[in-house]
Amino acid sequence: MQARALLEVGRCLLDIAAGTEALGRLRQAARLFGRLGDTEGLAASYERMGYLYSQQGRYDAARTNFRKSLKIAEQRRDVLATARARRGLGTVHFCRGQYDRSMYRYLETLEGLAGAEKTGAGTRELRLVRAHTSLEIARIYLALDDNTPARFHFQEARKQYRSLGFKLGEATANVNLGELFRIRRRFATAEKTFKAALMQFRQLGRPLNEIFVLGNLAKLYEDTGRLDEAWDSLQEALRQAREVKAAELIVRLLYDLGSVAAGRGSVEQARILLEESLARARSLDMWQPRLFSLLALSRLHEQEQDMTQAYAYYKELVALNSSRYDAAKLYEMSLVQHRFRLRIEQRQLKLNTEQAVRLRGEIEHAQLKIQKQEARLRQQRLSIEHCLSLLEAPRSGRNADAQLNTLAALTNTVVETAKEQSAGRRNSVPGSQQLADYLAREFPTLSATERKICGFIRAGYSIQETADILLVKYRTVETHRRNIHCKLKLARYQNLQSYIASLQVG
Image: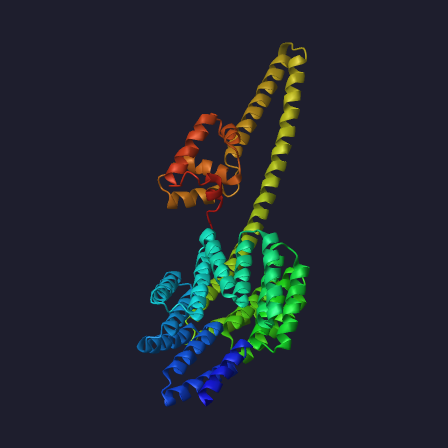
């Protein structure tokens, strides 16, 4: 009797989300059932501990307890306990993203239930487990973005719950249907379904389920850009969570409120909420909310250019790696990659700054060249006007010979200046020599003309402008560009100018 009472106390504590205390009570009940030899109570204790561990994200411990429950149930040939244990294992696989294993366990559960119904053992409890399993299968389809079978199984589960008069299951199915409608962006239908489920939970007196629905409504409001309504919904959920003293839910709601506050532009308020969530997660040893809070705080400080504090949070994230939490290694890998991405972005920013300084110098140099060319053009214009005046003036005797000699000298000067300008225009692309040297090293198959055209492409010259500068035909430059595209081994969809501009010439 004492063990039964402890098990009921553990279940009640689990219902109000008092995780640590519920776990201790259930362990004590399991020890007592083991001493008394009560295999039914022992299997139930392991099953409840498995669900508690899965809620905490400790999936290895949850799987171990469900397997113990399954082994005892199979030895006792208890169809109901076996189905529950198999469904629990399917839930663990689902939470870990192993959808194929999860589906196998759920189908195995349904097969066992179908065999029990054939033998006439179709009790209400078995039918409830069948409805629960249909609901879990629908969640798998929803996670795989296969919405049509997901909607079918959700509606089938809701139908089974209604036939059994199980109001709690019907409300849960409505919540999942609302989530499906939200994913399919049918926001009006989703909001209506969520509010119907919220009213059902209020009638049943289930505050924890109300908090869950309010969280889903907040997500819906965030998707539709109604951040003020999302804030109000989460505030109501947090108030109810404080009333029932659901410590773990308070941590998650504080994190959600911090995310909404950041979306509303209240950076300081978001920081305060996230820090409170982090402090509570540390005190309760909740690794997943702690990871999310650390990640959000690090990104928040990163946006505020406080790289020292951001790096401190990243360092704490990596330190969370523990053998107890198999998913922590995946988080560590992703966080290390994110840290390296930060370093690469900082290095790229430095390179972009240096490149901007170098380009500014090249632009100033090009402007000086343009000024010199304009001065030469003015000098040419004066020389040509002087030549025309000499041609129009009357010529006679010695003065005529002198005028012709002066005219020839001026003409030669104009021609030579024009040649120099033409040659200067051909080689006036900033950085063309560095690019040509780089291409000669990396792509030796390119000819000198093709390397020169690459410089014009990098500088943003069009085909016609390049042809005018090089004094060649349009088709010639076009052919050269096509050959360059082939020699650089670029795909058809790749842009030649973008590729050449992205080369790190150095």
